[in-house]
Length: 262
Image 1 (cartoon, rainbow, N blue to C red):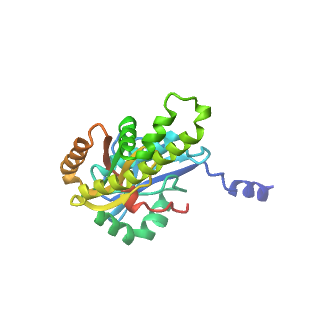
Image 2: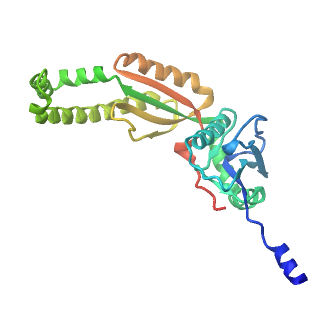
Image 3: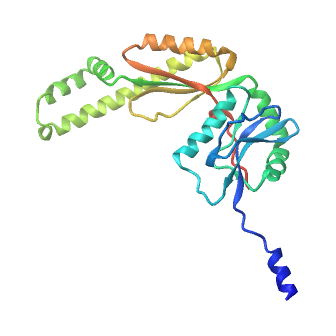
């Protein structure tokens, strides 16, 4: 009987809690007291030498991947990037406990993380986005392309069923023209930001009317210069392209680390 009881007592309880890891920061970073992470857990710090991890406790029974989880992950990292360098981990990094975070993540990659943080010191990612004003870009294409102009004249005020081929041909011309303009306008954005950027990553378009989407790594101290450069582009393209500047953000396009095994 005693043997059976001992066996029962020694059986491992199923693990219900884990530690979610957002990213790597210098050890002197402090989590804000009201910072809330995934699953509404308070954000804290796990340290190892000169580096640390931003973490929060979560229930391992709760599946990750809801839109609010992704937003919270980014919010924690982007908020930190305003005050300190941060190496983002890919979404969904969960380890067994804080000891595993320190030993299996921080200690195992200490030199690599420290070197990357040093490279990021004083820098953050910004994203410059431009989207074509639909009527303006269509008018521009029609004015520049004689065939498009003729096709538009042929289908104007005509039933859709009798002009299907012409509409398809016009759609293809417009699509190709926007792609060519996007390439040209993206180069213009990159050139305008070249003197400010430590590194540049041209992103793939996420919308058919996207004029440009460029991620840049910039000294945070030069944010006003960056804002001025984007503002000048917005003035140059007023009524043609709507411009947006996002940031400072964590350096997702430049130093995102893989999820740890845990």
